[in-house]
Length: 421
Image 1: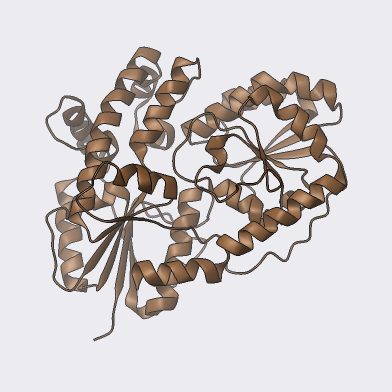
Image 2: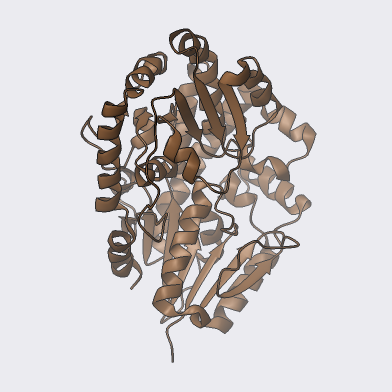
């Protein structure tokens, strides 16, 4: 009998318009090469779109997510302590789905099952199957993310706590959750619950994976019951063929999904704190904000700076944007996991100016490979310096070399063969 693989997620990976989808697409491509298209099944818990732009190349099964009433009931139960699930698990759980998933997994009899985060892992806590190796992709440690968000909130940073769950919530609930006191209370409740669940869940699978190697060490220090390893993301199938064509113009890039509360808050903070100073020092400056999810607040804020800030939205072909920009700006004020946007910049050889949060877990140790700056109001100084094309080329070459040494397909597949077989 052929070996088979089953990947279960609440996200369809195409188009790859955020970091999570990019990671899933890379993992799926490995499974297809390793097991063959006929021996891989991808289950998506979500509303099936009328059309899908990219076929995954394997068997694809859509399952309807929990209904609104079930989500609200689970969420209230989590907040009041009636169940041990975190809020993000509660929003994606239903007994109906658990029955269907367990039944289907039994029929498919996969030799490898990859569960995408605790939201999916919760369905298989009590489902040990001989001959099936179960791997939990944890993404990152969410309790650390909430911990850092709370710290930043104390410094005056405002978040939209609903984030990517906004679409599931009624308007009244979204308004309520944006009250600062309620935000902090919810973050503390979720931080404590998710920390317990992240540690506990490692004991229900054969291997747990985190995308940030530094967070692997953090979790191991808490003595989890199961093994934990790091996993590198596969972003691109081939080496970059796009040549840098930077001409010294003060054109900079901010790249990422504005639906994520931390990144959204970071972009707003950067524009409010730095744009006036940047315009004074570089009157011709232009900052392109690329990524979906810009809301009215961001659009209105950007409009205050006229042609200096361009909210470009989602751009499917990034080649020309990365080839012609001076640098990628990553003024992240609180984060967890690993920033896919940083690795994307390395792929294109685009210089990076980032806070520690923007490069955490990425092997960039020398200042010749990127510019580290944790004081947001000092970003303009580095931006101006990178407009020197000679200096820019030096950083660019080093960035490209880092990508090839750590994130090229052959390097990543070596690691995947060890992790997944």
